[in-house]
Length: 123
Image (tube, rainbow, N blue to C red; front, side, top):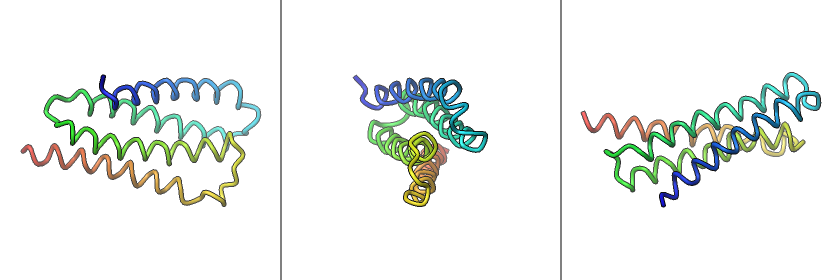
């Protein structure tokens, strides 16, 4: 069993559950700005699930490369989307975890740069 693909499948499941939760249960509670922030977290989660599916099924990457890229994306998703979920749905004060969202974005950037590096070095 590929651990990265199992985690990715679970994250895909969460993207659908959180998307439905946001659209139905949080619609009235969050207001327009809060709902936009929550939807941004769901959207980035799903985008990176799709990328993780590609990375972990791409045959030209070694297991080490797949694990490194996946780790960047897993941490990025946790910090970026997770912090948006915590701030909007969890009522955690943005002031207390303001640094987590951009840190997550930085890990997502590292994942994309690692992917770019892997493709560039093949040419």
